[in-house]
Amino acid sequence: MTKEENEKRIERLKAIVLSMPEKPGSYQFYDSEGTIIYVGKAKKLKSRVSSYFHTEVDRFKTKVLVSKIWNLTYTVVNTEEDALLLENSLIKKYNPKYNVLLKDGKTYPSICITNEEYPRVFKTRTINKKWGTYFGPYSHVPSMYAVLELIKKLYQPRTCQIPLKGEEIRKGKYKVCLDYHIKKCGGPCIGKQSQEEYLKNISQAKEILKGNTREVLKGMKEEMMKLAEELRFEEAEEIKQKYDLIANFCAKSEVVSHTINNVDVFSITNDENTAYINYIHVSNGSINQSFTFEFKKKLEEREDELLALGIIEMRKRFGSVSKEIIVPIPIDIELEGVTITIPQRGDKKTLLELSIMNGKQYKFDRLKQKEKLNPEQKSVRLMTELQQLMKLPRLPYQIECFDNSNISGTNAVAACVVFKKLKPSKSDYRKYNIKTVSGPDDYASMKEVVRRRYERLRDENERMPDLIITDGGKGQMEVVREVVEDELQLDIPIAGLAKDNKHRTNELLYGFPPVTIGVKTDSELFHVLTRIQDEVHRFAITFHRDKRSKSALHSELDDIKGIGPKTKETLLKQFKSVKNIKEISSEELSKAVGESKAKLIREYFENKKE
Image (tube, rainbow, N blue to C red; front, side, top):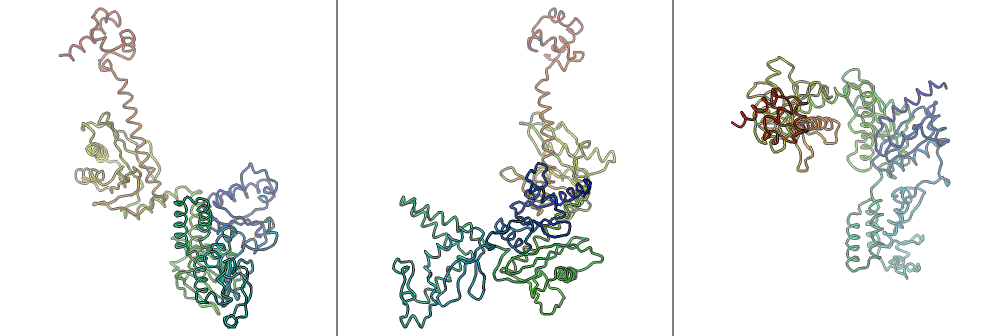
């Protein structure tokens, strides 16, 4: 590989990394032949994968790995634990060259509840559904031991491996073991505990293992508080440690499920020109394949048609023979011996949601890649989104925003910022000194500024904005409407950015009477709108600060025609203040600046006194 080819390879990989999300997940590196050579996990995918391509990476093994990477893919999940389990599953399937395998070749442990008359509860690494029901696997082994200990303490399941039979118990064929004598077992083997009571306990243990631990945790918390009130802090701390471990562990994994085997999961995400179809394959209860591909739309194909094409294509490409396919919508397709399922709840529904999440993430990442190559595309997308949300008559190419600034009515000013294609057009910014308003009246100041702005644009036949945004809520919007619509008879959409009681912008208002437009406060569009608001606030504050500074340096000598800065400086240097200059004699003044200037100064102060 030449130096130029290597640089192009690295740049291409870096471009993929730039569009990756900061979410938990697993990433896969491929060599030039398309073989997976490394599988990793990350709490934040973008941060972790980008670290491989830093110039300061000095570990030899990492450099060797990076030199072999030709492509990379990733799968997003909801938790760090799921990322760990997904990584483990993929390593076992693909046996990548650069991954360190588990020394014992085992997987993470699970908890089994057997299918016996008197079920047992124990940890295992071997999964055989004929033996019982399995929960897990658990990547955090201390959490597994904690829940096992809790179950033993609360429900005392038997630990012996004798195949207990009800008929044999009634005949008295069994003897109790040590656990019964030390009160760790209820003695079902000799009839001291009925089968009904024993099975009820096992049923409650299953609820804990399913993650339905709210009541258990509530009881533990009450016990903890009671021990603390009795000053039995050591015992309370033991309960707290168990409480924390259970709380951390009880969330169910969505990438591993012992109830699902050999299933294909498909979902579809659309935009105007492309359909993104995500495919997940589940084998032996674990996800071992995740892939998203694009279909370029030729006509106005329906979602179900595109999804059906994707299913045929993916199953053929990956050689899938799964007997069940999970999809989000009904599709008109029949495959021999294959069941098509649209799940409404449970593990299958969770897998479908994971597939949908990966499809949406892939679409978003592709969009980001395109926008990096063509920044104009991002602006058009966001303007279109804003137009659709607010039902504007035209694309908001030019947006103008106003803000006032004063301190107790002094040095009152206002500012107008202009954004074109959602980018600041600083040559079009305007500053305004408030002329007709005395005192701190924001509404009257806003009216004056808006009137001056749009009267001038109208008279000079200049381009009007496509949208006006006020830095405030319903009150500010109304005064702007009174000027724009009632006085000037102009048809310009008006919106407002309102703040909550903590002075943080929290909603976009539009229409009369104003209604809240549903924009998520963490969305890209909302960030752009708040940037416009922050910019007008900054511009107004800066103008007000400059005016205040000039006002502080202003003196009456500045108002005298014929007295320039040098004369002013000479007078203040010699006589220290304007008050002293007023009180000195005409002779002293003439000596300092000459007769003609002294006459001007004297006449100014005499006229002012009169």
